[in-house]
Each structure stands twice: as C-alpha cells, then as structure tokens.
Image: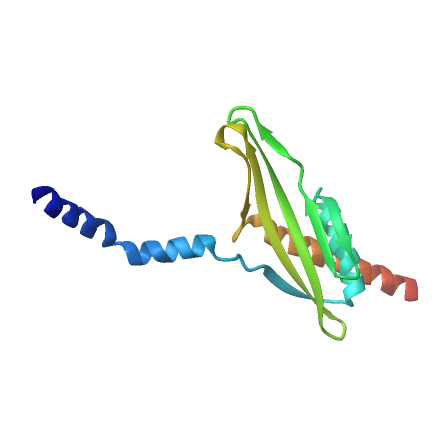
Length: 155
C-alpha cells in the first residue's frame, strides 16, 4: 500500500507541470512557419535576384524552378572533428506575386546534422536564425543594385 501511495504522489508531482510541458512539446513538433517578406519587383526579377543573393552568401543552388517559383540552396558543410559531426544549412525559398510589381518571398531554413555516434543524419527546421535577416538584407541589396543598373541603362 505504501508503494501505491508513493507512486500516486510521484505521479502527481510529475504531472504538475504538464500544461507547460505540453505546450513546449507541441511547439517542438508543430510545423515551422516560413519567414516572409515582400519585395518590389516582378516575380521573375525577384527569382533571379534570390538566386544571386544565395550565391553572394556562398550557398550552392541545389534546385530551382521558375515555373513553381522555388529555390533550394545549401551552405558549405562544416565539420567538427572534436564533436565528430558535420552540419549544413539548407534554405528553401518560395515566391509568389502578391500584387502587380510586388513579390512575396517565403524562406525556410533547416539544419542538417550528421553524427555517427548519434545514429546518423538528422534534420531540424529552424524557427530563429541570423541567416533569415542576412538573406533578406542581401536580397534587398541585389534588387536595389539591379534597379540602379536598369535606370542607368535607360539614361
């Protein structure tokens, strides 16, 4: 009987923080929403600028399609002999025209980790990372450069 009472008390203590734990677990397994920004420019123009922005950030384009307005790029693979792992960021961009001359860019980012001691490769979508702001700033710079070049050619 004593062990039964002890088990009930222990269960009660474990379940006391379940509500906040449930929220954290749900957040961890919920789909990660992309970071979204709007840019001035036709979808085709922003598509090519988005590719150039990845190249300037030393990412390699792994797939792209103007028809589906999709670009995927990966960073260099960073290895750590001390931890015995390798890491890479994989970015995906989806473009959609939201108004004439205005394009929405949705960026998702995943970290791929390969570690032999932990059972092989894993992927984790990133909710927050400095790369989001860096990429959007680089894309904005590329679009401004392209519009300046176009204006110079017209004059």
